[in-house]
Image (cartoon, helix red, strand yellow):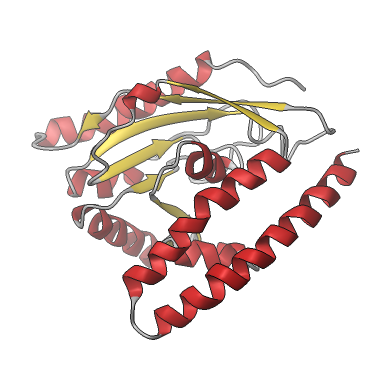
Length: 248
């Protein structure tokens, strides 16, 4: 049954994607070639939340949010830190929470038709896991974005967890937030994988998101800088373990 659902999701989303290509990708890329980079990026961000929400709707996700009051009103220099379950995590964050944040993603995302255009358009910071230089560049690019007052979203596990256990959150992923002295907002998400990669039918799939209180990376001592990744990672893990397990 899941393949029937995939077919209809693909069919309807293809129609939406066609409109997005005509009214966003083509004109935005032309504008970008003319040198209007801010307008180019703005056009992609005008469409991204809508497309993400459509995909969440088509896949029958029912999203529950805890701690919405912890989202900062001032999104200048904000680094969101989250566990990683599914390709749909970023859709939930952009479509439902409406986070306007550049994600860190594998360079392979550019090869995906349509998705690659949007990844580039919204300013995704690309990472080639085979290249150590790429990791350094991603940290520098992310730091630059944050210092310019923009927001970034990081998945420190480095890869999607394929079971109900969280992978280790790598301390190196926090470097850009520490260097930019960002406001760090920890997030946890549960259920996106069950409704997409591990989907079994047409039924509704519950997705639970918890937004934890923000942590400042400003004016920290060297010892505090070492402790911050441990504290934030543990907070994310603790919150994740409190989320209800998804139905199989």
